[in-house]
Image (cartoon, rainbow over all chains, first blue to last red; front, side, top):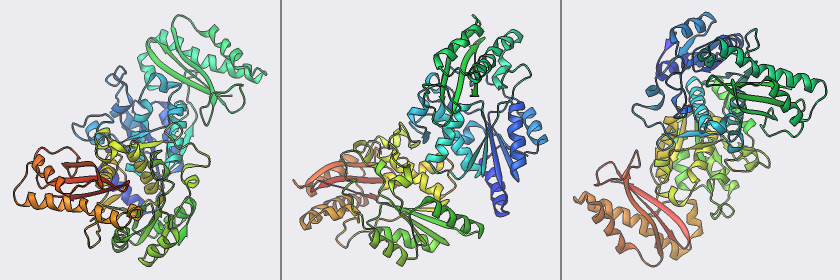
Amino acid sequence: MLVHTIKDVREKVKEWKKEGLVIGVVPTMGALHDGHASLIKKAVEKCDRVIVSVFVNPIQFGPSEDYDKYPRTLEADVKLAEGLGADIIFAPTPDEMYGEGQRLSNDTLTYVAPPFFYVNKLCGKSRVGHFDGVCTVVMKLFNITQADYGFFGQKDAQQLIILRKMVNDLNVPIELIGCPIVREDSGLALSSRNKYLDEQGKKDALALSMILNNIKACYDKGVNNISALKETAFSFLTEAHELEYLEFVDKDTLEDKETADNNTLVLIACRVQGVRLIDNILL
Amino acid sequence: MLVHTIKDVREKVKEWKKEGLVIGVVPTMGALHDGHASLIKKAVEKCDRVIVSVFVNPIQFGPSEDYDKYPRTLEADVKLAEGLGADIIFAPTPDEMYGEGQRLSNDTLTYVAPPFFYVNKLCGKSRVGHFDGVCTVVMKLFNITQADYGFFGQKDAQQLIILRKMVNDLNVPIELIGCPIVREDSGLALSSRNKYLDEQGKKDALALSMILNNIKACYDKGVNNISALKETAFSFLTEAHELEYLEFVDKDTLEDKETADNNTLVLIACRVQGVRLIDNILL
């Protein structure tokens, strides 16, 4: 069932809660692909009722980012989510979420602000305010759906770590389930932003997963010096790649690692054809 | 029942939710007086189960404020709250609330940040970060108790308006109930900080309610010019008073009023014997 208002979601949730049903929420920005599908499947498996939200959240985009051109494919999203067993597809307007004519800034809106140490690195460094916007909208979705479980992809690794921290710090009564990255056969991590790439771009984009796989292979062979592991990346990079970061951090705390170990998460962000792509791997 | 851990509260709440009981929460910093008692009574009246939290919240005090010397009277608080029918008195340690050895700053903790326009005035101007600390701890308490109703005193008027804004902006599934200011026969608004005052201090403190009552009397007689109404205050102020602010704002949005009307909230903050006292009245 496609639903556009908070009130309609709340009414359904109230019914379900009365019946003691377990509720799952899958927050998305739509343009659903097989990565999202894996989250929805997992949610349907684990919960009695599943709400998939489809909302391109304006407050998590910077002024020079792709909010306006971000792909919107609601009709197909509803079909996919319902086909997989989702009970509600919640697709609100920005006005429904943030109030009509509201100025979308922390001058006039209450924000959830994740810790500086978690934000001031990796994607947060180039995307100022991004994770404040993510935490704020996700907190709203958790409160609207009162879900018992929330499902998120491991692809947005920093996001998932920050959301886990939020749930812990603010005692949100929900359990977060992280789901593995889904990839094309080529190795390319699925992303709604892959739609911006042409054939050549998709080929060039393979560098991300190749770099990560190669680092893991080297680590598995015994290399744990991070500088050495980083250097292996350069053979995959061409003029088509604008590397933003390649970092080795603790998988739970995002603290920089001095030496690679089994708790090390390797994250990469790189622009191809102007499109910002990310990927990661656990060593 | 006195409870010190989040886990114990959650267990009780889970039981109550299963039975479909309506839960109320009364967040306090302890040192309970008749003002708190009125909140607890209201909660017991309206809800099936009532949780009173007693927690002097470190993150809402500035470095030069009275966190250490803030009155702590847990034994008496428990007696009072239980006598009024509270089911749980939740008195956690700072470590229980924020994690052991955690640095209590937005470097390492997720915060709820109320809007700048609501914070950068009145008490927020002199108490930088105060309302971030309040919103964060109250959000935690709402999440821990999963209460249907939260009870707050109208005395902390700016706090109540900011918390209502938080509940609205973040879609928190709770309804806030504001309760009238409780006063001594003399007119002095009850406050845990009144304990810092000696006899003379309590006499001097009467200026706050006298100023507000006089402003309301003048308004009722037809004066709506704010400068004129403000000027009436000075006849009550002596060398014993250090006025911090006397402001006329909208009762819902905290926007400055140009002319006094029935939606105008008049707020005063004034130091007496070094003790910061606040009071307010609706015109």
